[in-house]
Length: 125
Image (cartoon, rainbow, N blue to C red; front, side, top):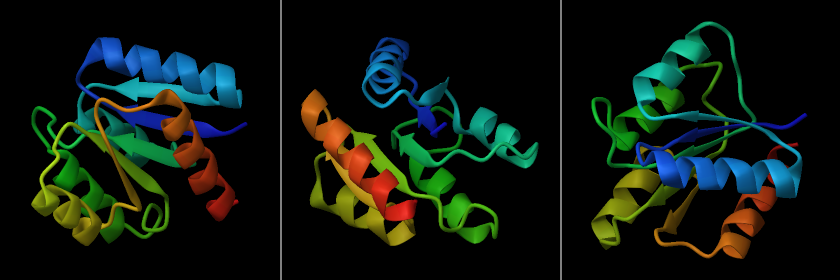
């Protein structure tokens, strides 16, 4: 079964995305409000198939989280889709520079999110 980690500090949005991905993709979805908690799970050996990451997180930012994933052998190639309210070109470029594979701005269209997630999972399977 596909495992997706959603790292989003807006609990309402995280729940919405979780439910949508579970229903549409029959995926196992785990949500984290802080990147540090997701990092702890990865260090314990949990390895998702895809990350959906907000950039503006408390503590470790989405940028820092992605950079850390890319520096670690076991997570270097895992796909990362940024889902962020940041619309500035500089934020898009920085996210890609640190290792994000895609970028989707909030508010997002549900069909577009699902299409991006499906495509990223297809490319890595």
